[in-house]
Length: 327
Image (cartoon, rainbow, N blue to C red):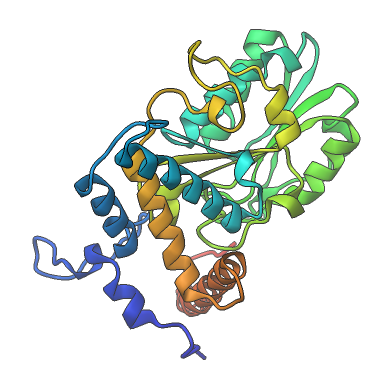
């Protein structure tokens, strides 16, 4: 039974791309969920507002620069509310892939020859290749957590053998963009912490579908992308403050040395950051609560519930087709 609580008509009206007919004069259905989402109107509005009322770089004494400074503060606070982290731990970049490579270069001093790096066979390449390059540059050994082919989830039966006292870094995706299955990341990260390893979460494919809690995950680094949750092409990195402070990030000499700005090389995509604020505000408007963080979490819970109802209908239909096997 479908819930009448989710305002689906109102939500659809906020996505312009859903209301434009294709070349065959029908409204399209976007099945590119693993790739990304369409932009929501509040995101578009915030981007237009920023670029039409005057743009500037940071740290000036004039109005448009002050506006941009405040925009970045607002955006980091919004991500903090979305992911339950400190705004000081939030950095922006071109995309998740670029940020992961940037961080991997910064971690070279943390890894030595013979150390072990653990990745998975279920992750998309942006959470595998940066760490493979790190291993190649440092002489570290790479281990893979394999896939349970019956359930298309990570096989944790050999976890005690894979994560050892030599393990220095463990990178896991919270959800697979290929299969849609959710990984037991907290179990893996707990084992990694016992070994003293750094833990990295790829939350790109999780954040659009359920509330992600950085504090509860207790990982050291988390990556996600605004393009996956109704926003623009923009990468987000969340790094625990104590690690972030120690991270030797490659940067220009005059660039800020303090966190989180030291990871943000060059001029950022300020209009995209404005759009990020709009995308998160859309999620907040779906929720209820006494503050922004509570409303955002409530909004994500409503999205998750609505998705589960749609999935239930789809499952029932697919199970009626003899040739289709569901995992």
